[in-house]
Amino acid sequence: MTVKPKLDSKTVADQARARGAYAHVVDTAQHPDRGSTLNAIAAALSLPDHFGRNLDTLYDGLTDLSWLPPGEHVLIWRASEVLKRSDLKSYLAVHSVLSDAQRALTPRAGRRDGRQLTVVLAD
Image: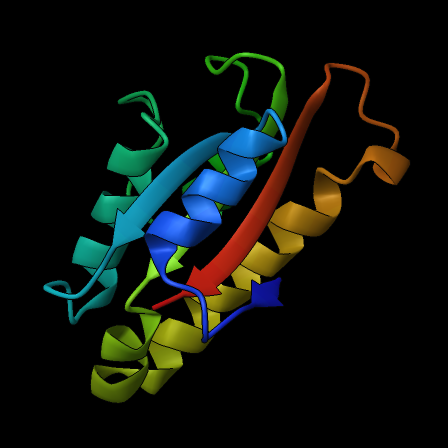
């Protein structure tokens, strides 16, 4: 996972689009708990309803992405520190799932569907 604290989410999104990637901004400034953070991530990536709102199904959805077009999808997590300050355990769990999913969707992981996930923390 990439941490770029000096870049704001708009700059990161513009850079992603400039290289042909799809930018998905998750703003959790108003989401100080795990459930609302998962809902915000699900909304940003248009996760289908059959993906539940828990860490296991979040990982499943992030490593599928079949409803999105092929290419790089950049998930930009804005204000992640809100969850980190309010619930460190949940922050670490969500961060871990995002990191694991990003690793699973790297081009070298043998993906053949042309989808890649990049996660960036930006504020």
